Length: 115
Length: 115
Image (cartoon, rainbow over the protein chains, first blue to last red):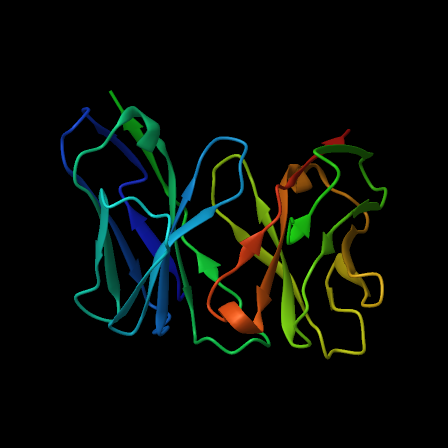
């Protein structure tokens, strides 16, 4: 089945130690998104790629970077994780950016713990 | 102002009964899309149902239906014949013309189905 895959499902890192989360998709969708979701809150969009075009949200900290080497893969790099970065990180994809339809398909998420 | 408002932080329903989860939205765009997602405790966001602003019929997907009242700007989710597996967090989300790639999420409703 076509899907969105995130690895690892659980990631533990130390305060200040760089960490990379990965996302891959077999849907061949143009758009890939990274969301941060803290406990009992709605997902918050960090950035997204439309093909190779990178779009950063205005309030995304500089500590968060992303790479999309090809259509299938997208990475989230946290350069110096702080305790406040502990959260669930969700990757999502969509076909394009038309208003009608175009639902986003989410991966299972990576739960990041910062010690 | 909140773009998506979900006024019910928590809801309880008896197994096999129907339940309505409320969602109101705020937009000045004529073209927009409304989505409902389910998030079980495992963390994955599961797409349930979509309603376009130009759709005249209420969307239905199996046991899920969307009660779309455009003039009132409401898009309530109705789950019929609730099952224990329906216990989860439910998010209403909107995509607007001005931010075609971004979903704006409500704060969510935690649904618990009682045996």
